[in-house]
Structures are given as structure tokens and as C-alpha cells.
Image (cartoon, rainbow, N blue to C red):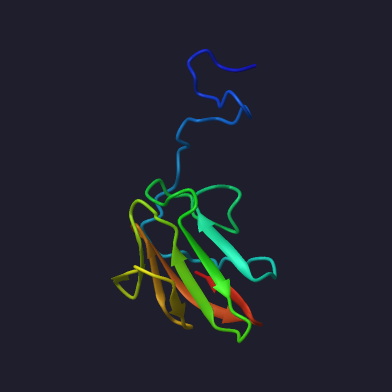
Amino acid sequence: MLEEEGFFCPFCGESLQEEQTPDMTQNFQEPFRPLPKAQWMIGRSRTCDFVIPAIRVSRQHCLLTRMPDGLFIIEDLSSTNGTFINGIRLKEPTPLYPGDQISLADTHLTFQVDQGLPVLF
């Protein structure tokens, strides 16, 4: 049953209220490890491969792609607060290297590669 106050999507019934999220302004302690594939969505949405539950992170913030040669590329998806690599705001798809610092709004992650898969912590 839908709430009369309009806190649920009229199409799917999902809650539209902003969830209470933990303070994600500090570096993550446990690494994120995704499923093996060639592209990974990073954002606040539960449908993303790397879920960052911070209000300033867009639902679909950026996209990480592994190229056929093994190089990783990161691309901002017109996020509100921007994607930064080593302090520089992305304007176009950009290569990522192990040890690079990724900032999504005020959330900071370190990029690594483990057995050909991206790891963020």
C-alpha cells in the first residue's frame, strides 16, 4: 500500500525518502570487490556494482571500464558533485592506475587491481 504522503514511487513502490546514511567522508577500511565483467557502475543506487551510500554521491556517479588490453578507464556520468582522480576533476574518460585516489564528492577511495578486477578501498 502506498503512503498518502508521497514517500513511495507510484510505479515501483520503492521508498523515495532519503535514507539515513553513514558518514562516508573518510576512506573506506574494507575493499569493495566486484563481480568479474568489463564495466562497473559506481554510485549511491543499490543497483550499482560499487554502492557508495553517501548523499553527495549521485545515484549513478561514474563508470569504470576494463579495456581489452587490461587498462582501466573511469568516466564521470554527469554527476552533480563531480569525480576527481588524484585531485583533478574528470572532464573526459581517464585511465586509472593502481594507487590512484578517486574522490566522489567528499568520499575518497583508492584504486587497486587484484587478479584483473578493480578493487576500491
